[in-house]
Image 1: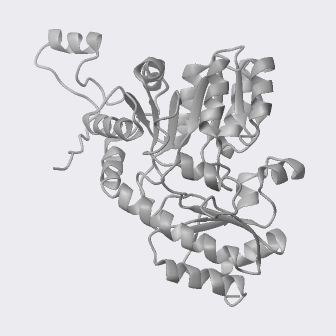
Image 2: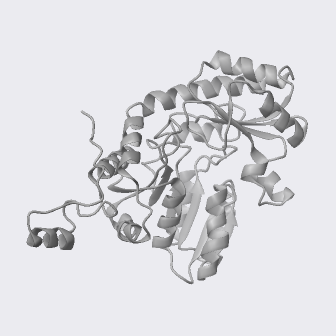
Image 3: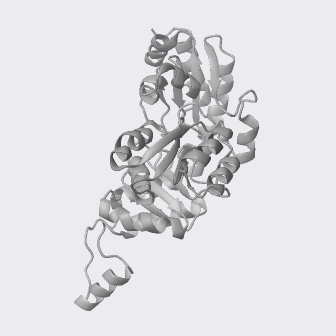
Length: 368
């Protein structure tokens, strides 16, 4: 009933001839940097959830981002990535790939016309974006963006960590990236990443990953497999609680704006209803008083853990601007939607009433 932990680095064979056949034909298991039974079980399960042929499980979400891009790009290529992308991914494209002759451009997922113009002039080989975006839940029109990307002969790479392992498989996405550290593992005790795609696109990534070496440990795979047993229960509860939290925040006088697509007033509410079965477990909002008040508010909370991650059974909170937009100038950060008073909540499994009570006392200044 439970997949064993194959805690071994090496596999043995009855004879040299069988080892050689395994190595040459890539059948079975040879060395855990290449493949491991526990890790392979996780890869099969994630690929099935995402509706694709295959998956490569790696040591972290960023290992998935960097390995995929290194496998898909070469010197002289151009990559387009969204302003609303994960900050470490932006940094890798801008600061590391540029050293190897790979150029890049930025676009907003809310501006398909700008992407169309970029595709026509820059001819990127890969286009990367998130759905929804972290930390303020911009929801791209995936069908529109993928059509533009493929019409110009590029590959579409979607960071689907916030969306979830089970959504967007019906869209024409070439590569899905997941941080399995988040909702898949779910308990803040394991790290992992996944690259998911059909065989033709995943093949060069599967070939390169063992050479780069960021492979997942079998015990980490076991913990994530265990987390997946309760994935849907946790995710649906977290999304329902997030809806209640967002509705409370929307009515509070200390809150200027709530960034949650489950609210009817959110600009992407209808699009999100069309694309996904839920609105996610991240709720961001802009508090009156700017960064100083955001920091004070965070410190007044009693039930939320101050942490820069998400997807945990525990509810987490951070002021957003220092972690997610400090590499942008003020104008760009404001365009992205991360202002000095933006706070990100990542909702866990606690009672919605308890979390709302805690938010209320902190917004009212009672915990100072």
